[in-house]
Amino acid sequence: MATIAKIVLGILTGVFTALAFLYLKPAEGFPRPELARIVALHLPNAMAAIVAAFVAAIFGWKYLARGRNPLDDAKSKIAAVLAAIFCGLTTVTGMVFAQYQWGAPWNWDPKQTCIFLLLLIYAAYFVLRAGIEDPEKKGATAAAYIVFAGVMTPLLGYVIPKYLPSLHPTNTKFDAAYHTVIWGMSACLIGIFAWLQNIGIRYEQVKGMAQQLEEEMA
Amino acid sequence: MWGVREIHAVFLKELRTEWRTKVALSSTALFAIGGVTLAALALRGNPPLALDDPSRASVAAGLLWILLFFTGATGLGRAFALEEERGTALALRLTARASAVWIGKFLANALLILGLAIIATPMLITALDAGRNVNALLLTCVVASGCIGIAATMTFAGALVAQASAKSGLLATLSLPALAPLFVAAIHGTRAALGVGTRLGIAPAFQTGMGDLQVLASYAVISVTAALMLFDYLWND
Image 1 (cartoon, rainbow over the protein chains, first blue to last red):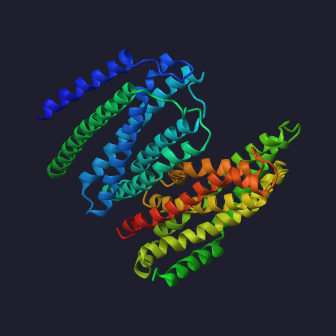
Image 2: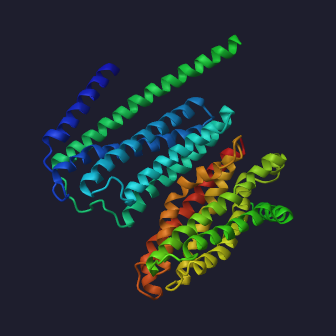
Image 3: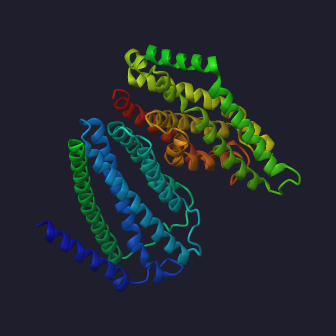
């Protein structure tokens, strides 16, 4: 069952990527419409990053409030790693878009800056984890920080870019094909996130078992 | 209800402890004055940079919040680290509930950063000659709400840093990204208060800065609420 789901996910991701580059028409309303198709990859990455950020915060909260289960801490940590990766991909695809549409890869646009600042939140989270040795203290402190940062994410990802003047277009009308590809690709990336999260959790479980074995043998 | 007496006791304890040593007070005040001096030296030393009014106001707005951030990072993180170092955290846990401890320390930190902002803001604006079109009321509102947000986030981050073995620099590392929404709104609001992009008069400046004030007020409310909810789990560990 899981193997079939992975094969379907792989095929769908391939299909939507092909559609983004071969089927979508140039996006009217942009300075270089034919090169604006990258939004079909840029927006889904941003959505996957936000989903991963909320998953990290939810498992962080669960770790704090529901009995300090190390598995919840591991889930929160892995989701934070994936959120950082998706934030990085959003920044890179955004820079490619900005290079061709606005003339420079980095323009200090509020949306560009906010997604980069989200990336810094995850960097700070890993610095905090590295600075604490006791596993239980590390879990609780990191969970508190990721929940706090998760609460601030809507301000950074939605409110600030909405009210400040931005280079991002607000009046662009994407046709139905764009909507289909963007939403389809978002679903695929969220599926890939769930898959990678599952692999990460299994890795953490094996690592925990190996540590336990080492302690018993010592 | 809400342990007002406990909050008052923790708040007074913080002020008395600080008054006895004056470490946070003197280090942050010196940091703020030193920062203003360096900024003025760089921008107004001979030969002074030929900046027009909006450029000067924009530079002053950015520098003001950089200064307040690092001033806060110098002094606001000590509240919980000191309890851990002196071994008094357990006594505090036994005498006051978690929310009272956090609120008491937050109020003391807010008082410290507001006091420093009252000194540093006019000093910096005067030193950089950025106050020709200043709207003092909007500037006061922006700085006060920004300082409350900084105090809330740094008090919470200070409780996290107190658990770490390597504390040096960690408060600034943790606080800066979490404070990013506040700084975006605060810098934009300060520019509006210093007359960038607004016509003269109270109403036009408030019209430009109203969005920033709303974000700053939301940030303050959200950060205080989130910190209060989460601190309970950390403190009673």
